[in-house]
Length: 347
Image (cartoon, rainbow, N blue to C red; front, top):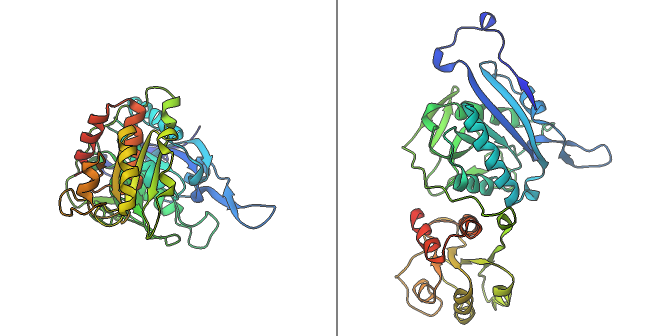
């Protein structure tokens, strides 16, 4: 663990009391933000430490920043168990009294890790995830600016006790709504259903609307239960549903990424009904924006037909976030009827 401290007070320019002595913990998990070119061939890999990342950021002189290398992985290689471990560290840091916490990681899974952390985290200190779309040595690397904005957001009183956020490109997104919507653009992260909850303007947080925190989910009963198997099967034109075969013996829960407002081919219905009798099956939309309906359509394979067969509506959650809600509740031992009610919190 390393620290970068503010310069001595008598050597600093005047800042208001509200801007002084903000303690921030930066937890580095790897990802593009920490990647540099390999020496053996083309491409980049995670090499930079949290201390390296912070040292490259101008504008942190008014913060007391400590860093910790929590993981050094591409975002695609992070696991649910990694995030459970991260939540334990976040809550420890909150008890230790830090003003804010920043997590740097790869953008491949950032929307999912931030959301899962939001499901679990029970502390008061703000937690802000950030990353970069360009490696540290690329022209126009966005990592330093994103770290600075994340630190500024994490130490703002306006986001305290309001859950977990993602800050990219000076925009503040609630973990509940944010999605990565482009493979390469520095402006890849948006909240398509709501827009960002705020912005950083001249280093100051400006929130657009009040923030509501959802009730946390209990942490997994055991370390092993954190790895509960929940998969997503996506409906597509003419699909036979062959991927549904035998799932009741291989997974603990299933999310169906359905067409439109919650529709699947009529040939899927008997198989889904059988699965729903054995394991929790959640009905989400593959579109990713807008809710699954409950009673508009009535044909075989429609949302009302599937819900009558025992599936649970995901509400407005996209399939990937619905999967994390289901997995978190299964790992916590939540009774099946309570799992169905938990999805109503997102309606």
